Length: 368
Image (cartoon, rainbow, N blue to C red):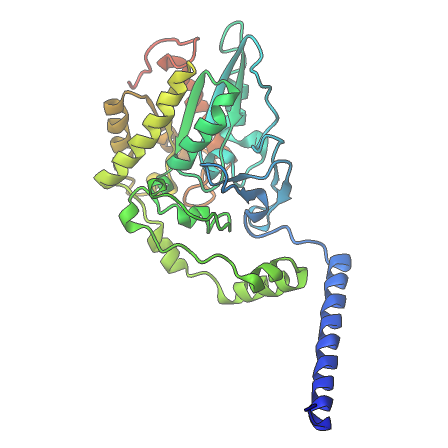
């Protein structure tokens, strides 16, 4: 039995309304795409891509170039190999001494220009340091990485660059729950994360739910993204909760130190298999330059390196010396300014040259 005329009339009006709404949204989307320039972005989302097919879970998107609202006019350009900086030849050219830097956003150089990062500065500072050989310093830093993803990336990709020396940059947030950086910092849903990626698997948070159909559809529409970003700014992040989660690990638990040693031992062994040396660079954080600084974390890492047999390059003393005379060395709790990267590069060069980690070694470092 067909519906009454009144019902058919109401359904017709509803259909017309839906069609009108759809047409209006389509016109708004077209107008926004034509007349509203794309925003520079408030996060690192556009620099990254999930890689569920690789053990390192996600990485930088090859060929992308982006500026971010939160870091001013800094231009981030990712090369065809998926890293910041220029392309380096594979296989390695003859008469080349190649240093590979692994790390997170500190090594990547969040907030500073590419030529101001400590890997780029280190390459300039080491020019001519190894007689008869060109020194290259490759930056394989990826925002949000920890020792697990660094080890996985090196084993899968890093060894193909044929390094002579592998430096891994340690940051205190390497001991955090990695989902706070894998998902929150890069805004990616990286899927299943193995327990071994967690410094302490017993404390891992509940995995976030993958985005639904409506969320994915909104992500494809500029109008929806603009509205969503406005609402998120109104609501604001739960800074107290984030701050509590990203606590400082001045005294890591034994399970965390054991995890860190496993990851670094894995990198060291893989480096040795291709004839490369290995060392850990310990980057300080801003509070360690304050009124009541602590260096307990550095002590734990030095002890760990001594027990494991791999050298550590501690930058804290150099940062404290520079803090008295230099411009600000940190832009936030973790990330160095351009001045901080300069201090890091100069101290790394100094310790490399006196530690035997590069061929032009000049003898034991004064403080070792």
